[in-house]
Structures are given as structure tokens and as C-alpha cells.
Length: 298
Image (cartoon, rainbow, N blue to C red; front, side, top):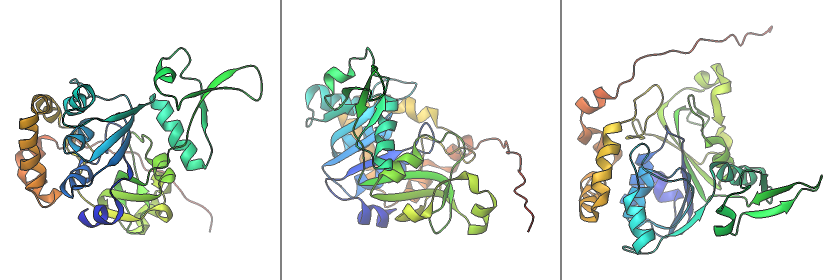
């Protein structure tokens, strides 16, 4: 992780750490903080605690997003301080709907100049975001809205398993992992486990991201905590509740960053610090998918 972030994440970049509900790579966010990257534009559907931590650490100058919050708990207080009080510095916001962000990634991945969608009808978002533009359909009298392409400099996506060549497989909620990877200039795949090519070929429909667009593969088990990786570990709901109290106090938040990010050399240290008792509580029960027959006549 250290080498991938040092090589592929540069000051001033547009960085997208995607993953919807699960597969949110906190370890990558922590490494970006640890390396003290600066002036980043962070893009994400539903920025949650990982971006609250990164913005509190001062890596970010702008946030491009759709909906934000500590899911199931409340606000993101480090972000609120910067937006509401410019404390310790202003934060620029560029807001879309969920589908607006997906449309931007889709346009970026497809090399299109914009993406049309209906979802801003009777919404106030176009009045506060001039990049959401009302247009007339070329095929009738209908009015739709256009959003511009989003091509991050770096996309960081977490997956359950990947080959050394970068073929990345996901199951559970897919989010927009594929779209952001194809839209980005540089792609970092972080995986729970590295598998042989034969494993990938045995179940090809799970391959969401092909290795031909991947720049780095990082093997980092448990990298999503307190988020989860379907089938590997569950969501740490206790952490999200605790974060609300931590983030309300900027001094306490700074102490947390010192204890859990800056003072640790790697995510392996974070995993060890959390402790096996806590990890045991997050171990999911097994629920296996049925095998399928890919047989053919040779």
C-alpha cells in the first residue's frame, strides 16, 4: 500500500475511493494521510467516515460527492467544521445525486462529453451546481439534465480477490467499482486475497475489473474496517457510533489520527492494534453461493 500510494497518488490529484456500503478501502485513505498528500480533490458516492478522516487530516481542498454522512449515526463533523466555519480551512463542495455521480463516471469511462439523466427534475441541485445543465432532447420535446464526465487521476477500489495481473473479482453490492476504474487514469486494486489465474478463470463473471486497466495490485486483508468485505468480515457498527463522539471534538480527532494512523507504519499495525477479540466479533457466518456449470464441448 505504501508503495502504491507513493507512486500513484500525487499532490493535486482527483482521487476516488469507491465502494458502496462494503469494500470501502479505509487502509488506502489512512496511507494517503500518513504520506501527507495535499491539495487533493476527493470524489465519492456517499462520502462517509473515511473522507471525514482524510479531510480532518488536511489532504483535501475539494469534495465532489452525492449525499454525505456517518451512515446510521449522523453528520460528518470534520467536514461540517470546514464547510460551516472554514475550520481550519475552507472546503469546496460540488454536489450531485447518486445517479448524477454514477452518470459522471459512466461518461468518463465511455469517453462521452456528458451523461443525460432525468433525476434533477424539480430538484434544487441545478441551482447550486452550475455543472448540472438543463438540455433539450434531440429526439423530441423533452427536457433532461446533463452532467459532465468525471475522470479521476486515481481510482482506488477494494475487491474480495484478485490475480497478480490485476483481474479483480467482486460479489455482494457492486456499487460503481467498475465505472470508476474505467473512468480513471490510474487504478489501484486492493484485495483481501491474491488468487491464481485459474481461480479467476473458473468463475469469470465475477471479474468486474480486468487487469489490463490496473496499475497496481495491493494485497491488504481487512483493509476496509470499519466498513466490511462481504464474506470476510462484517461492518463494525460500534466504530461508527464511536466516531460521532470522536469527530465532534477536533482535538480528540487529532489524537485519534495520531494513535491510529500517524503512529502506525502500516495497515497491518492497525489490524493488530484493533485486536483479535474485536476481529472475532466481526467474523461472519458462512453462506455459500451455489456453483454453476460453465461446461462446453471441447
